[in-house]
Each structure stands twice: as structure tokens, then as C-alpha cells.
Image 1 (cartoon, helix red, strand yellow):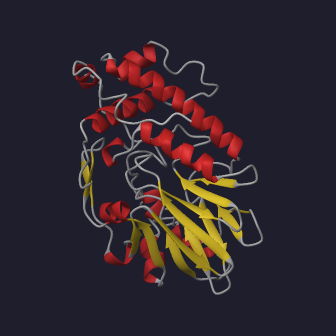
Image 2: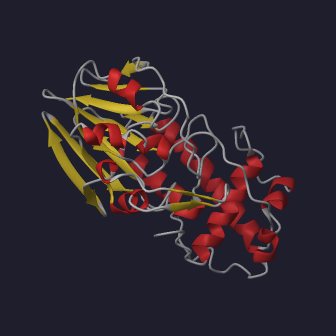
Length: 320
């Protein structure tokens, strides 16, 4: 597989910055987007959410608003992501009375970490990449909305962190967690339930939604291609791959999405090198022939452009 790195992009002409400067700031979309969503003002009744059994001990709880993976292990549950703040009580109601003793965050966005306070206050140990902990532990800026988001309370922040890889054993399940550098944010991880052959990948795969790049938090298209290549390498033909949103996918489906992202990386890098803006790239057909329709192709290309230049300048966002 082709590996993306800085070298292919560092040859960019500085004139490309002028093209990007004309691009207007994008609006926020719902769910697994590069910019955090506002929490719902009203509370949601604590009724169980829909779930799908993948094995005799692993379920995917959907509609939280994305997917939450739950491993039942004797004395309680291991969760991958906690849902939004408003929907966290419904996630808890979906656990059939079992206590979540371990919570793993795939990244910092509030639709994946909004339930941290609820589960943390109940005694769950919260695990995440160190960079995710940093984002959750400080106020951060949302550029598209020109507003600041307050840090989560201490009880909602990860207390067990790592930088590259870590592993834990819960009951009969061996769980590996690994860093996915700059794939969607700068703190993404995968969670691999090895004995059950279930791989949770957060927002690094997006089977139904437009792929999202949180450029302000370090995500960029080259990092996404490399991360997806790593996930394809980890999986086999029997692996159930769980994205943050959408259905469970196979290794073949993940490979197809990875190949599409590689094609987009090659096209957009070359065009950005020559000073093309997001609108220029859209007008010149960069999104054609992908075998997939994007909901908002301009928004995607805007984030690609911002991410390419942020990567080129080593821009690290608000805190990292």
C-alpha cells in the first residue's frame, strides 16, 4: 500500500495559500464531524436504544447518536465511547442493569465523550489517548462557530492514557488499543477485541457519512489514508469493523473506502500544490468517479484543504 507523508506535500507552492484564503468558513454538520456538536438542551428519556449482537458477549448499541460498543464480561461492561450527554442515560439503560466499569474513548468529540461524566461518576475507569485527555481537560475553540467549549469536569476525563499502544484483559477477552495518527483528530485510536475479532474504529471509517477531517485538531487526509491502511492490515475477512456511525463493515468494505481516500489524497494534494481552492477542486471534478456520492462535497474539500495546509505548516490547533 502507498504510504502518505509530508514529502509529497512539502513541495507545494506558497501561492496555494492565496487560493485557500478565499474559501469561506464551513458550517457545522451533525455527528462525527470535524467540529464538536452542541449538546441537546432537553433530556432524553432513559429508554434502551437499539442494539445488535455481534458475538455472545459483544453488542453494538446504535443511536447514541452514533455507535457504542459494549463488551459484557462477568462483573460488568466495557464500553467503547459513551454517546452524547443527552443520550448517555439511554446508553446506560441499554446495558441490562450491568455496570460499566471500563470506558474507552476513540477520540474527543462530544458525540463520543458526552456520557463520560455519567459513567465516570458511577466509577468507570476512562481510557483514551493522551491527546484526547488534553482536549477534554481544557477549554477549546470551535473556529466554524467562533465559540469556546468548556473543559469536561475531572470525573469525565480519561484517567488511563497511552501514546502508542496499550492492552488490557477483561474476563476472557484480550483488548488491544492503538494510535491512529492524525486520521480524524490527532488523538484517534482503534479498539480491537482480539478474541471476538471485533474492531472498533471510531470516526476513522465512515461507510454512510462523508469522511470527516477535524483539521483544527490535527486530522488530515494523508493521516486518514495511513490509518485506514493500518486497520486493513489488522483485520481479516471475518473481522467485524464498527465505525462511530453506520453499519458494521467488512475488511473488503474498509479496503474500498481506504482506496477511495487514497485516490482523493493523490488528486487533492496535486491540485492544492498548484493553488487550487476547495471550490476550484470541486469545479474541476476532483470528486468524480469515486463510486460514492458525498452529501456535502464542498465541505469535505474545504476540510481537506485546511488539513493539507495545517499539516504543511505543522499547525497544532488550540492545545496540541
